Length: 210
Ligand code: BEZ
Image (spheres, helix red, strand yellow):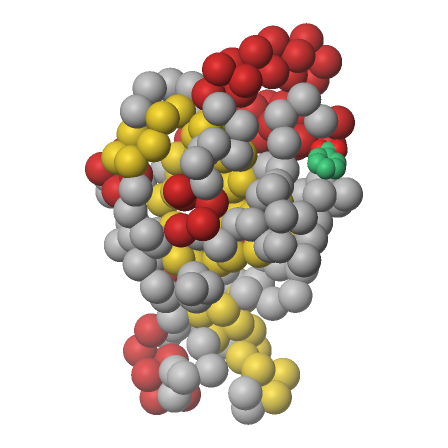
Protein backbone atom coordinates (compact mmCIF):
# COMPACT_ATOMS: atom_id res chain seq x y z
CA UNK A 1 0.00 0.00 0.00
CA UNK A 2 1.18 3.52 -0.73
CA UNK A 3 2.78 5.39 2.13
CA UNK A 4 1.10 8.74 2.74
CA UNK A 5 2.13 11.86 4.58
CA UNK A 6 1.47 11.45 8.30
CA UNK A 7 1.76 7.64 8.18
CA UNK A 8 4.26 5.96 10.49
CA UNK A 9 7.29 5.09 8.35
CA UNK A 10 7.33 1.28 8.25
CA UNK A 11 9.98 -0.27 10.49
CA UNK A 12 12.38 -2.92 9.14
CA UNK A 13 15.70 -4.58 9.72
CA UNK A 14 18.26 -4.62 6.91
CA UNK A 15 21.90 -5.18 6.02
CA UNK A 16 23.77 -2.00 5.19
CA UNK A 17 27.30 -1.02 4.24
CA UNK A 18 27.77 0.00 7.88
CA UNK A 19 26.33 -3.19 9.41
CA UNK A 20 22.78 -4.34 10.19
CA UNK A 21 20.20 -1.75 11.22
CA UNK A 22 16.80 -1.83 12.83
CA UNK A 23 15.35 1.27 11.19
CA UNK A 24 13.36 2.94 13.99
CA UNK A 25 16.04 2.18 16.55
CA UNK A 26 18.70 3.53 14.20
CA UNK A 27 16.72 6.76 13.73
CA UNK A 28 16.41 7.24 17.49
CA UNK A 29 15.08 10.76 18.14
CA UNK A 30 16.58 12.19 14.96
CA UNK A 31 14.98 13.16 11.69
CA UNK A 32 15.69 10.76 8.84
CA UNK A 33 15.99 10.64 5.07
CA UNK A 34 15.53 7.25 3.37
CA UNK A 35 16.23 7.41 -0.35
CA UNK A 36 16.44 4.79 -3.07
CA UNK A 37 18.46 4.77 -6.26
CA UNK A 38 17.79 2.41 -9.20
CA UNK A 39 21.11 0.57 -9.57
CA UNK A 40 24.75 0.51 -8.52
CA UNK A 41 27.48 1.37 -11.04
CA UNK A 42 25.20 3.69 -13.03
CA UNK A 43 26.04 7.28 -13.95
CA UNK A 44 23.26 9.41 -12.44
CA UNK A 45 23.25 7.38 -9.23
CA UNK A 46 27.02 7.82 -8.91
CA UNK A 47 26.62 11.62 -9.01
CA UNK A 48 23.73 11.54 -6.54
CA UNK A 49 25.52 9.42 -3.95
CA UNK A 50 28.65 11.57 -4.25
CA UNK A 51 26.63 14.76 -3.78
CA UNK A 52 24.80 13.44 -0.71
CA UNK A 53 28.18 12.45 0.77
CA UNK A 54 29.54 15.96 0.10
CA UNK A 55 26.62 17.68 1.87
CA UNK A 56 26.36 15.16 4.73
CA UNK A 57 27.55 17.84 7.22
CA UNK A 58 24.42 19.85 6.29
CA UNK A 59 22.22 16.88 7.23
CA UNK A 60 24.22 16.40 10.46
CA UNK A 61 23.76 20.10 11.36
CA UNK A 62 19.99 19.61 11.11
CA UNK A 63 20.10 16.34 13.13
CA UNK A 64 19.03 14.30 10.11
CA UNK A 65 20.28 10.74 9.56
CA UNK A 66 20.61 9.70 5.91
CA UNK A 67 20.38 6.18 4.50
CA UNK A 68 20.42 5.04 0.85
CA UNK A 69 18.99 1.87 -0.69
CA UNK A 70 18.91 -0.15 -3.87
CA UNK A 71 18.06 -3.73 -4.76
CA UNK A 72 21.76 -4.47 -5.21
CA UNK A 73 23.49 -6.38 -2.39
CA UNK A 74 25.74 -4.74 0.19
CA UNK A 75 28.95 -6.16 -1.34
CA UNK A 76 28.07 -4.44 -4.63
CA UNK A 77 27.46 -1.13 -2.80
CA UNK A 78 30.87 -1.48 -1.11
CA UNK A 79 32.66 -2.06 -4.44
CA UNK A 80 30.80 0.86 -6.04
CA UNK A 81 31.76 3.18 -3.17
CA UNK A 82 35.34 3.12 -4.51
CA UNK A 83 34.14 4.55 -7.84
CA UNK A 84 32.03 7.19 -6.10
CA UNK A 85 34.97 8.39 -4.01
CA UNK A 86 37.26 8.39 -7.06
CA UNK A 87 34.93 10.23 -9.44
CA UNK A 88 32.91 12.50 -7.12
CA UNK A 89 35.68 13.48 -4.71
CA UNK A 90 33.87 12.46 -1.49
CA UNK A 91 33.77 9.00 0.08
CA UNK A 92 30.29 7.72 0.91
CA UNK A 93 29.83 8.54 4.59
CA UNK A 94 26.34 7.17 5.30
CA UNK A 95 24.92 3.63 5.23
CA UNK A 96 23.48 2.09 2.09
CA UNK A 97 20.91 -0.69 2.44
CA UNK A 98 21.34 -3.78 0.27
CA UNK A 99 17.86 -5.03 -0.63
CA UNK A 100 18.25 -7.93 -3.09
CA UNK A 101 15.08 -9.61 -1.82
CA UNK A 102 13.20 -6.27 -2.24
CA UNK A 103 11.77 -6.49 1.25
CA UNK A 104 12.29 -2.81 2.07
CA UNK A 105 11.65 -1.66 -1.52
CA UNK A 106 8.25 -3.34 -1.49
CA UNK A 107 7.47 -2.07 2.02
CA UNK A 108 8.04 1.50 0.78
CA UNK A 109 6.50 0.94 -2.69
CA UNK A 110 9.80 1.89 -4.35
CA UNK A 111 9.38 -0.41 -7.35
CA UNK A 112 6.95 1.00 -9.91
CA UNK A 113 6.39 -1.82 -12.44
CA UNK A 114 5.24 0.49 -15.22
CA UNK A 115 8.62 2.24 -14.97
CA UNK A 116 10.70 -0.92 -14.31
CA UNK A 117 9.89 -4.37 -12.95
CA UNK A 118 13.26 -4.78 -11.35
CA UNK A 119 14.72 -1.40 -10.36
CA UNK A 120 13.75 0.96 -7.57
CA UNK A 121 12.66 4.44 -8.64
CA UNK A 122 14.35 7.48 -7.06
CA UNK A 123 12.22 7.74 -3.91
CA UNK A 124 12.84 10.09 -0.99
CA UNK A 125 11.12 9.87 2.37
CA UNK A 126 11.73 12.49 5.06
CA UNK A 127 10.78 11.12 8.47
CA UNK A 128 10.27 13.16 11.63
CA UNK A 129 11.42 12.30 15.17
CA UNK A 130 7.88 10.96 15.73
CA UNK A 131 8.63 8.41 12.93
CA UNK A 132 5.90 9.92 10.74
CA UNK A 133 6.46 10.57 7.05
CA UNK A 134 6.74 14.33 6.49
CA UNK A 135 7.60 14.32 2.78
CA UNK A 136 7.79 11.82 -0.04
CA UNK A 137 8.85 12.31 -3.62
CA UNK A 138 9.53 10.12 -6.62
CA UNK A 139 11.83 10.83 -9.55
CA UNK A 140 12.45 8.66 -12.61
CA UNK A 141 15.78 6.92 -13.23
CA UNK A 142 16.80 9.46 -15.88
CA UNK A 143 16.60 12.51 -13.60
CA UNK A 144 19.02 13.09 -10.75
CA UNK A 145 17.48 14.69 -7.69
CA UNK A 146 18.21 18.15 -6.28
CA UNK A 147 19.41 17.35 -2.76
CA UNK A 148 19.70 21.05 -1.90
CA UNK A 149 15.91 21.07 -2.29
CA UNK A 150 15.67 18.23 0.24
CA UNK A 151 17.65 20.34 2.71
CA UNK A 152 15.40 23.32 1.98
CA UNK A 153 12.29 21.25 2.68
CA UNK A 154 13.81 19.95 5.91
CA UNK A 155 14.43 23.57 6.99
CA UNK A 156 10.76 24.30 6.35
CA UNK A 157 9.56 21.11 8.06
CA UNK A 158 11.67 21.77 11.15
CA UNK A 159 10.57 25.42 11.35
CA UNK A 160 6.88 24.68 10.87
CA UNK A 161 7.03 21.85 13.42
CA UNK A 162 8.11 24.46 15.99
CA UNK A 163 6.10 27.55 15.02
CA UNK A 164 2.58 28.08 13.65
CA UNK A 165 3.88 29.33 10.33
CA UNK A 166 4.11 28.13 6.75
CA UNK A 167 6.77 28.87 4.15
CA UNK A 168 6.00 30.47 0.77
CA UNK A 169 7.07 29.39 -2.70
CA UNK A 170 10.84 29.07 -3.12
CA UNK A 171 11.39 30.09 0.52
CA UNK A 172 14.88 29.72 1.89
CA UNK A 173 16.03 29.65 5.51
CA UNK A 174 16.13 33.21 6.89
CA UNK A 175 13.44 34.66 4.62
CA UNK A 176 10.00 35.91 5.66
CA UNK A 177 7.30 33.33 6.42
CA UNK A 178 3.50 33.23 6.50
CA UNK A 179 1.31 32.94 9.57
CA UNK A 180 -0.49 29.58 9.36
CA UNK A 181 -3.95 29.80 7.74
CA UNK A 182 -5.61 28.16 10.77
CA UNK A 183 -4.30 30.85 13.19
CA UNK A 184 -6.91 33.52 13.93
CA UNK A 185 -5.82 37.18 14.16
CA UNK A 186 -6.60 37.01 17.89
CA UNK A 187 -4.23 34.06 18.40
CA UNK A 188 -1.67 35.59 16.04
CA UNK A 189 -1.50 38.71 18.24
CA UNK A 190 -0.45 36.47 21.15
CA UNK A 191 1.94 34.30 19.14
CA UNK A 192 3.53 37.13 17.15
CA UNK A 193 3.27 40.26 19.34
CA UNK A 194 5.66 42.15 17.06
CA UNK A 195 2.83 42.20 14.48
CA UNK A 196 2.72 41.21 10.82
CA UNK A 197 2.21 42.64 7.36
CA UNK A 198 -1.27 41.95 5.99
CA UNK A 199 -1.09 41.46 2.21
CA UNK A 200 -4.60 39.93 2.24
CA UNK A 201 -6.53 38.88 5.35
CA UNK A 202 -5.42 35.29 4.60
CA UNK A 203 -1.84 36.23 3.70
CA UNK A 204 -0.02 37.56 6.75
CA UNK A 205 3.75 37.87 6.56
CA UNK A 206 6.28 37.94 9.41
CA UNK A 207 10.05 37.63 9.66
CA UNK A 208 11.18 34.04 10.22
CA UNK A 209 10.92 33.22 13.95
CA UNK A 210 14.25 32.30 15.56
C1 BEZ B 1 21.60 6.10 -13.81
O1 BEZ B 1 21.86 6.26 -12.63
O2 BEZ B 1 22.17 6.76 -14.68
C2 BEZ B 1 20.56 5.10 -14.24
C3 BEZ B 1 20.19 4.07 -13.40
C4 BEZ B 1 19.27 3.14 -13.82
C5 BEZ B 1 18.67 3.25 -15.04
C6 BEZ B 1 19.03 4.31 -15.88
C7 BEZ B 1 20.00 5.23 -15.47
